[in-house]
Amino acid sequence: MSTPDEIRRPLRALPFWMSLGMIPLAVLGAVAGGWTVLLLPVYGWILVTVLDGVLGENADQPDPATPEADLFWYRLITLIWFPVQAVTIFALIWWVPRSGLSVAEAVGLFFGVGVISGTIGIVYAHELMHQMNRTERWLADLLLATVLYSHFRSEHLLVHHLWVGTPRDAVTARYNEGFHRYFWRVLRDCPASAWRAEKRLLARAGRKVWHRSNPFWRYAALQGAALALAFALGGWTGVGLFVWQAFIAVWQLELTNYVEHYGLTREYRGEGRYEHVLPRHSWNSAQTASNWLLINLQRHSDHHYKPDRRFPLLQTYAEDAAPQLPTGYPAMTTLAMIPPLWRRRMNPRVREWRRRHYPHVTDWTPYNKATNPMPRGSV
Image 1: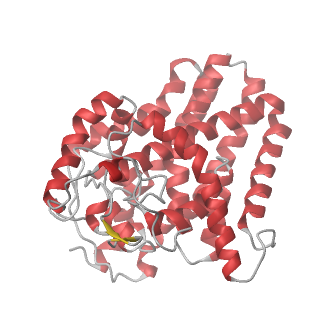
Image 2: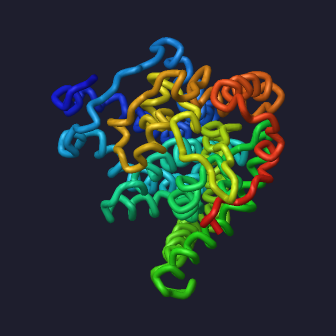
């Protein structure tokens, strides 16, 4: 176990700052064009996967009682990321129409910008939204506005963490469900689900859904401001590039969501009751480099156990307690884009998981089709 004295060292936190390596690559792509616009996805997906293969797994268990003051250098990268990302996006929106880049180069460059705002920005927003500090929650909202996906905060906090592994949670991928079908289902269902969750929360407080405390007003204002700024800097071309990178970012997020809980359903106990969330209901990976880039998101079971535990202190679990992926999330999300290969690799793992933890369940059809009753109190 790593002690607080070891954890607080700046050099210990430094690998988690590898996200900053994407910014000069974005600048290079904007200035040089050509093949350099491909460097951002190469860095975020291929290089990290290669490093995972070289560095292997990291099973270190940080002391969860480490004081927050000792986590300064870890927290700092998440606190500065909104201005870093916003300046990158909007500076490039201003630059591209004036740069002489071809349409293909501009589209390729902003594909890479979407890798930044999805692989890094949304992951950091996820870390920030789980904290009680108002500043951090505001930073999460600002980051999500740059990808036009602000409702994710409501859906994630009020639905996913409560009802993961049940039919109420749209982002729990069903067994044998291909990513492409899953993606459009989530895009269709989650905004309305988030709205219903906020409406229910307001009703408990005796407020109408139109009350000013409904965060959807803030979501709309921030997203509208982001689109207006894109138009002011780059006209309709700027708006198009902004929406394109936002789509790529959301695609990155939902690929990750797809991988995190694929086929891992909670047992239905009758009368609208489900078993409690356990470490076995999330896919994990102890790969070193991808956990640096994704600030330990792959220690996902512990995140569901302690959602507000800061990322440097997340614990890892043994295979018999929490299912492990064959490699890190970047490689697995790439595999998920090819459903036959994904099923060949992951369906046997899900079936083995079911035999290990639920040998008494003989009919998995209601779980595969999400036709079990909704959890009691979820609607």
